[in-house]
Amino acid sequence: MSFSIRPFTEHDVAAALRLCRSAGWNQLDSDWSRLIRYEPDGCWVAEVGSRLVGTVTTTRYGQHLAWIGMMLVDPEYRRRGIATALINTSIQYLQRLRIPCIKLDATPEGKPVYERLGFQTEWSYRRWQCELAPQRDDSVDGKAQTPMPSPSLRSAAASLDLQAFGVDRLDWIDRLGKDSSTCFRVGGWGMIRAGHLAHYLGPLVAANASMASTIVDELLSQTAARVFWDVPQPNANAVRLAEQRGFVAVRDLERMWLGQPLITPPQVDLQYAICDPGTG
Image 1 (cartoon, one colour):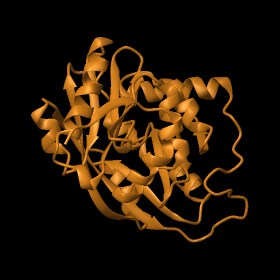
Image 2 (cartoon, one colour):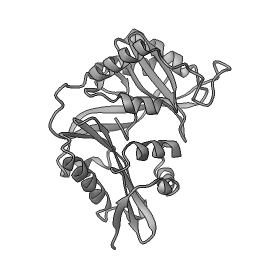
Image 3 (cartoon, rainbow, N blue to C red):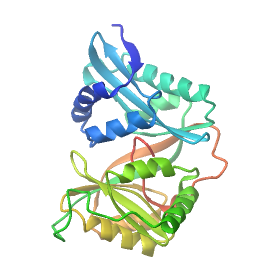
Image 4 (cartoon, rainbow, N blue to C red):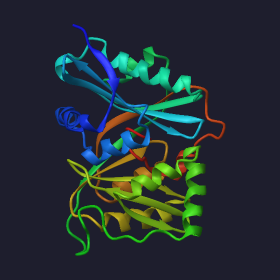
């Protein structure tokens, strides 16, 4: 069986959503479009004939870090080298741009593929899930009417996120915020947005557990739906917050990296929810 790899365009989103649904993933068409518009030269699809059977995206954060995500292959076409070809295409693209550190979030099924390519585990994280009851009347399907933070608050949030994540990702956060309910406070910030299966809590960065608790409760009060919350396992305070609010662990994933470590190591104890498995 032969297949080809070509650039991912917005015309491919409907077919990519078909793969999303078959895999049980949570993304909406807006999530795909955001990725393609952010990194138009770094997203690809695999085709057999005219049928789209695989996808992969890259997301660059400056010149020091990039993410590989949305690695999907149609179940009928797995174990035929498509996943490896898509990942290699992504790695080669990022290496041509001289990005020293490449990361991704791996499912248990995908981890062996990435290990063969030289990726190493950084830490694990766990997806927690909860069904929420209605709490307030002004929620708007995961995108409440939240005001933009003041310039000083936005600057403080960016500084704290730099400590937590290790590189500047403010441009990506600004784009994500357009499709999210947000909560910015002195000492932390977070977002929640709609998804196909559940609302998604994250990213969430806070200076301490008390501030994280305040932000979590504010964001959860804006929805009355199932919520997914991806929590870094090394952050015991974040795990405790999820347990205290009735969340139940449903799956485990691994954060992996390739290349050189970041110059500024991420502070995982500041990360109370990741951004998304596809973008970190």
